Length: 399
Image 1: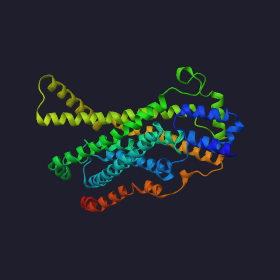
Image 2 (image 1 turned 135 degrees about the horizontal axis):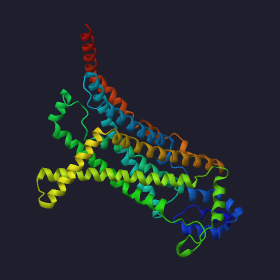
Image 3 (image 1 turned 180 degrees about the vertical axis):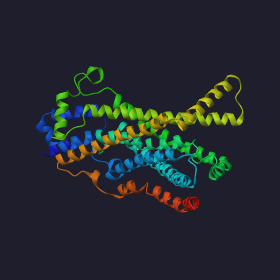
Image 4 (image 1 turned 90 degrees about the horizontal axis):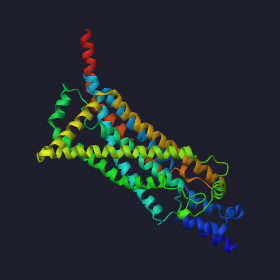
């Protein structure tokens, strides 16, 4: 009995997949009776337990709220931008306040998620500590490291656009403080670039995790070695998940493809705005000559063309609105799907799923974007004179 306890304890941590499978084979010979005796340790090591900091119910809802809020605000801004009249200007003021607040909270939320994902993935990838952090939780961490950045593409894409009508007094005031607004815009782009830099390690880990050769099956190991056959691996999976509907191959590919597409979209936005900052600096300093000048002018014209298309072409606007939303929805669906698998697996092993517990972090994950509607309400109160003026003008025109 003591020998079995020690044997199971040695199977609790998975620091290297190949070594762990060799150790598992030596301890159990993949015999179902022997496997069941160490079921809790084996399943926890390979697939992990719930990590509420990354996939708890509160923060998971927070990811969905962030994506929905970004999409709704961006859609409304595109609908109301540059409309003329006091009523339109009222909604423009309110939406601008909400969008600015959304970016400020979403950017720091994303920084926190990226840092947490980096710590967990580094511990797993380098075998430092894998306690409770298995394959399912790694998939969730990789997905949310992308999901938390996608809503930021909306405010970043809308930064160059003028919200108010060109003839309005408010736009005239905006033009007078253009230098201050440009500095604020540059600072926002620097924060977005910081998030993208932090995202680079989860992106590398994602590429390895999703696209590296599979090590399960005949001859799938290094130099054609067989670590575990498909039959033996399926035996372990069935032991851990029982009758639970497992994550299918098609779901895995949907997750992997959407993660890659979303990651490339994020880096494309970062490179685009990095190019913009570089071109603007060269134009300001007037340092480019010859071929360098020709390239800079070409880049500047290309940037202006894309910005005009984004401002005026409905198809371009629809793509930039719905592509991040679609990718984010697929990734969130996979996150909640993996959470349900974890919950069912925990029940199958006679345990409790910690991901549905409402702790401090879960409450924070839900209310972190509450200041956005609060800022919008405050802006609405401050700009209420626009609505009153609109009503007065309407009454005057009828009298």
